[in-house]
Length: 266
Image (cartoon, rainbow, N blue to C red):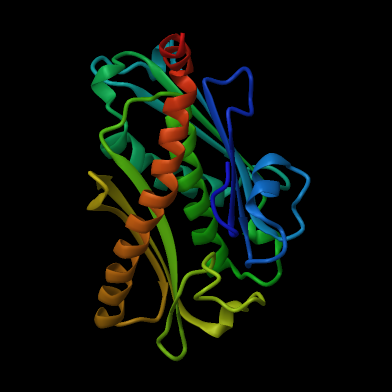
């Protein structure tokens, strides 16, 4: 499906999973269009992050994983190169804090297990243009958003929608969004070009932001700058949800109920 010039998305790409999604994020609005990105996995020249998320469940858990009145959650994150490190464990804990207590309707799946596996194909850490301060939040932002599409694809019941966004404050106090071509210059920027980087994840109800689920900030900033980040992030998240999430959900409903449309045509 076509999303934007900065994001490519494919879903239901793993046959033996209940739900799956592949998300690609590009560094600028280049000649690669989103149709190519969403239909082909070979167009990675401008990808700064690319990952696949698969969902299995609800399934029967092992006895040690079983919870009597709610679903248990198993999250595994694998890096693009090498074995999992403390970075992946940190990302797992951040994602779990969002999904376990806020998003997934746990009481619908008592004594059952939901498995979430995330494989990075291209990570922001693979690029020397991004330092550790920036790449951790860029990767976390990507896996949160990719996980949303995979959960929808797997038909997992959720309390509400959710989305995250990364906003950068430069030395002049300007607020920049890495994947927004209108805010960020075409060339990739070095980490030292910025004062701070912020990740904001919100729950969304009735097309409006409801609650702040996660706020991660690194670097130097003051209270006024943080409030400006929150104000801009709310607008951008609502725009992202209304333009991309809703389009994806509507397309999925049409595909899932195509039999109903065919019967009506008869």
